[in-house]
Length: 364
Image (tube, rainbow, N blue to C red):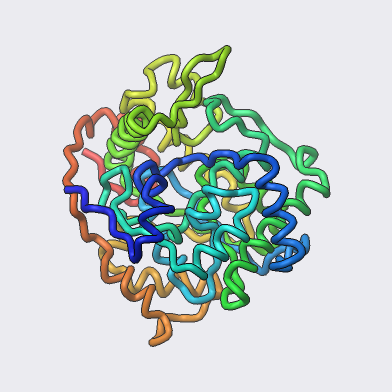
């Protein structure tokens, strides 16, 4: 059952009620004069640090949608050393320092269930995937389901400087208290080697979940996302292509062919995507100097043990009394307020059996 959204004060209800209800996946644009003033204010009044410098050992989370990425993201972003792009920043990507600074100063926030009704609580300060930012940098149309290869020639020095500058601004928002940048990278899944080259010293964490559950949950995700965009009038209306919806399936090379063969709303599509993602990650892991893989099921079975190992890999301070927020998240692992009805396990196994067994999942 979806819980009622909570606001800490009347100002939050006034300014954030629409955002809390709509929970837009992609941001809207501010009027140009307003945006110009906010940028001027950030530079001359707030004196935002936007120096284009590579961040110190950023941490990037990889994995299929519905494989536990949000759970692990919320845990890691509760660590006192981690800074991240939050929902407010994602809503206002072109002036997020100003917006987030005054959100914090005025105590503006909300807390409620994510629109996916998947036992995830969101706030204005919750971590965001920042899909629009990454798609912009990687020249990916957020509504296009076709894969386009990228090389480092697509990332000239000025673009890399822009990316590093945005990360510097994100870290400025945390007033120096957090020094390590984190982001979940579902939007640019096929381009991990480019991310490695743009962010020297980065740590890459891959979470994997049983294909049977992941493929089923991705179907539920697709249906819920599309319905939410219809209900909240978040449909992108293109004069040539017609109404378009954001679909969070990773743009892996064969996605378009799976859609053509099976359709978006078919478990064979999501099962093939799981299989392709695992194959892809296995093929590049040797070329990623700092790579760590963990199974969703192992985190649920032993959260303190697995998170401790993960923090050590990321070179983050270990769990202690200063990690109250992360301890709270660890205690919540496995707590669900919803139920799922999954099916077609044999069909998923037929497609994914080899990779499932390779990663420790028994098949029939």
